[in-house]
Length: 170
Image 1 (cartoon, one colour):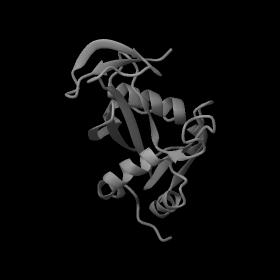
Image 2 (tube, rainbow, N blue to C red):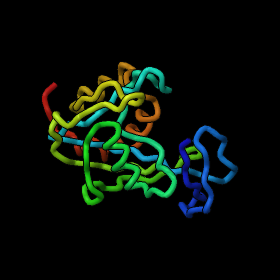
Image 3 (cartoon, helix red, strand yellow):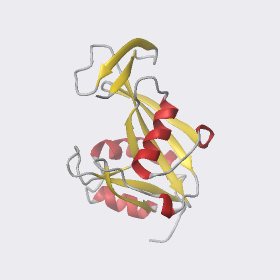
């Protein structure tokens, strides 16, 4: 059973826990994180397990923040679990916070040289991991290979995110 802390729209803790899978009470939100990881000017993407919603689609690291966990702690945990990458708080830069539906999204940027040997998929979550340049990423979006929520987030902040890609020839 996965538990989340509940927040109001101003990110104040409400002192209530919520069980994943149940309907959230009116006016309550939970934290969800994304980590946009760039190494050598390329974006790290993971492919979702076929049994999950948006199965076999590509995405950036993300997930719900657990009860008694901060957004940064959740980002560090999700990155380690889903990809094998370890990072510390100071390496993550909060990029954007936005409310969508019942979620308060916290998106982080991690710019770090990653040794491909550390990459590992999380059983039941991810089935593949790769780094893509900007042109590959845009082609993946065009070919409907990327989970729709991630495409929405990318398009909303494309100008800012594209700064982290290293320009290359196609």
